Image (cartoon, rainbow over all chains, first blue to last red):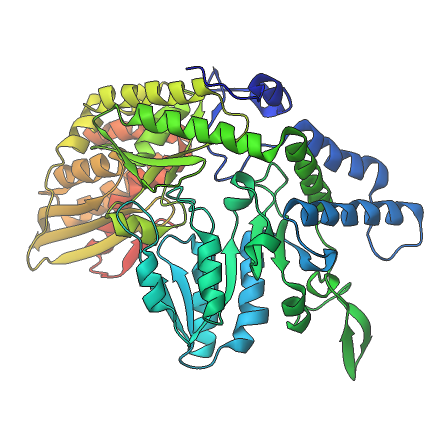
Length: 410
Length: 148
């Protein structure tokens, strides 16, 4: 299949050393970027170079290495700020990942807001990381967790949202793009409606940041979270964007070094933003790697990457629909970068095992979204998810392997 | 690594497609629910025991082909066995699948086809889930077992 786009995929792939290796004697067909994306040479080199030439602890040393490391770490923050169009560096908190960012907001912001009987509103399509932190904070405060249902296509039932939200709703936490279904949620509309109701909004952007253009100012979102390792960066680094006026009022999440101005046994004065929320020595190399990943994305152009992924998605849906035994789970009108499916009579783990034999990496399981699986009455799905480096021939290989596994199980 | 088709032999595919002894037993003498939280395999085992002899075994649940066929083959292997012999078989099956040295393979009979799973370590739990659940049911330990 030839689809016109401006990206030279072979050129892009040359930047990713992982594609040089074989898996089970086949060239690697990596369709698991939704779980974690591969890293380009420039990210690997940036991390390596830091450790080889500049590494030291940050924000404290008077020596050259410490200053250089500090500059690299802080310039990564600047890159993140520009990437999502935040107003201020104070609004960019480095965390371990989207999960930690959500837990931070749940504990430092929402826990103090909630009274018995208050409500937190999430949706039925959330990843466990945007469910469990809210369950914990609701348990702590005797607040209630409310869930917006989804329709058979895997879209939020917006009318239900309007009837569920009320004066008790203090927080609305919704995923930007569903990791299990691929649904792109109308977050701007949700944020507006929530704000009209006086509720705060957190958007889980773990899938959103790599596959859509995020402008936190335009969205007017209160909190937006994402992870580095799904954005072609390293693991163990993530971002919490929060509006400055909110972060300023919030209590620290963890205590320790770097988050203080002065410590006395009588009392401690906390540091300014963003350091108030970065206790302890942070993931310096992770931040540097994430900054480099953002440079790399910007060089190629996120809009072009998204267009390419949309083409891959459209092609894969078109080809999957030709196979009678295959059923796509999640047929939202607006979808991004991934397709979940089941094959009649074949468990996703068996599918994944046979794909692996063919050098194809997919995710098989509940995708940390068990309520979604329950909604569709299935134990698991197979999920192919795309990144900038995927080719149309990757989809062809996927389709061939599906036909093969169907033949074997017949 | 061996070819995957060596693991997914006809006998496994057949038991997956037409599982034996699938269903419930009313008023069982032993019951347990097992699940593998990592992959979502979930299984119920029902036992009928008469005079220390396992007279009937049934299972219900959703799992991959390895999990389902292992459960199906297990029920066939267990029916008619004394509790003591069934326990020995559980021990042997578990040992063969989890230890490096394969001994006493012949004693496993038909179940030996499942030893191919050893080439795929993450799938060993799929093959042993039914057996762990059976073991819990035998102990009349109505707790949920997990492979974690």
